[in-house]
Amino acid sequence: MTQSQQLHKLAARSATAFLLAALCVFPLYIDKFSNLGVVKFTGICTLSWAFALWLGALACVGARPEPGRLPWKTDPALWALGAVTASGVVSTVFSLSPGASFWGLGGYYGGCMMVLFTAAGYLAVRAFAPQKILNGLTFCVGVTTALVTVLYVLNIFNIDLIGTYADTAVVERAQFFSTLGQKNFCSGFMAFALPLVFYAFLVARGPRHTVFYGIPAFFGGLALAVVDAEGLMLGVGVAALVLICQKNFTTRTLRRLAVIGAFFFFHAGWMQYMRTHVYTQGGKPMLAALGHVAQRGFVVCLVVWAALYFGLRGRELPLYRPGRVLAGGIVAGAAVLTLLANCVPGFPSLGRLDDVLIFNDNWGTYRGTAWRITVESWLAQPVWRKLLGVGPGMMHTAVADWAGAGITDRMKTFYAAHNEYLELLLTTGVAGLAAWLWFVIAHLRRAAQSWLRPGVAPVTLALVSYLAHAVISIRVSMIFPEIMLLFALLQVFCLPEQGDTAAEKTPAKYGKKAKPDGPADHHGLARQWLPPILAAVVMMAVCGAASRVIFGFLY
Image (cartoon, rainbow, N blue to C red; front, side, top):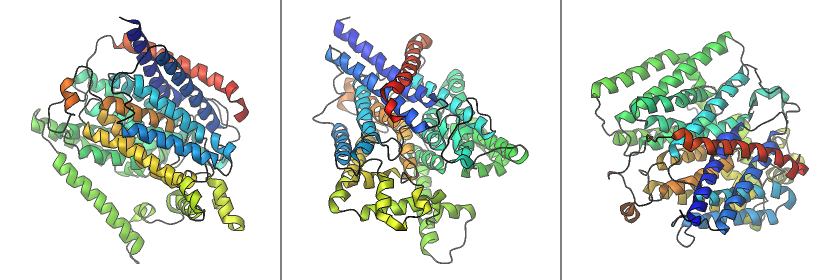
């Protein structure tokens, strides 16, 4: 093995450790410090720069990315990344407060620095992450998902393993804080983690792999039943609609979805009992209402599973055509009901669905107010600020300037638009929003062309879930760095595997033979994964401690 090959192998292992640290260890990184935003931001910022600089140093001394990893001249995704970075820098330079925008001090630490270190992390992963890491990485994400879920449930029962947070912003709404931070974190994390966990279970082959990936899926069902965030329901729901439209959606997939449904109804019924007979705190997510029919839902899921398992006797039939009809009907029905509920006077009430369908200032715990004042603040800006924005994290300042003496107590509570796209429009302008949409479309288009390649489908579903979740959520440093790494990993999975000359000429398309997108049985998994897992844990601990010194001025 030549020196260049050894360096490349070291770089690949380092990129694997980086992904494990960011996706699996960082979500568990927390302490008793009350300002959770700065703890998370400085921790992931230090971790990202450490790995990016290390991988950059390896590249300088001879570790070269494989051909096709960073094709600057032909890859629109790289050009879009440059546009996103440039728009973030430009909007910061012309910000209402450039210093605050650089660090994101006016919002949730989502400023120019986060744009820079997530771009560096994206390039590092695209350059060196190995392609054959899906199975181990997904299982590690599943373990983290189970831990986050259990800690969240303990918080619901007022059991905090690391002590009560001091000086929380809104003490009387302590249910918004789990033992791992804000509800926004738990919702955002589950939005991308659950599609990865569930998809691994959907495609698992054989009893051993089914149990191996079924345990995290079981806890994923618990997460759906307890995490109090409608954005999570929206994200996972949209991902499910995308899944049933694909040509690899079959009766076997539906059978596994029935098992996941049984997991959910089991947990929803249990939580309904606990809410009725035992003290719990926190809000009640919309999906939790299904706890009232949990027994019937559980039985229906078991009947569907049994009918498909015993009725087809191992046969696997395609279901993508009825899946597309169902998805189209759901989307069209939702659109029609929304129009009728908002535009037709006297339209009959649909119960709790009115809270979702009827848009006003009170919609989504006053998200309607946040959206309205964000749009009106943007419309009040001069033309050049409409194009370049008021600066990252400057939403609250811009709203205060626009409202003046007419600002209400409710308006004063919003430091983010609770919609990433509207927030980008105001803070980075039309240029920044267009750059981000270009970046997203470039990646999803490549994913659609390579859906059958191993790893593409689960990562795409995770990203689709997050992008839908972002419609009613906040871009925070707790979640967004992981999303950028998933975008990079998606590009890695879309590449032909080494030696796959036929695939290099013709991308995998629906209906053509492709390698099954399921867990492979590799020997020596513990020996393969233990070193990068230990490295990820050590690096997160070291970077977390170092961040207090490097970014002490932010605390």
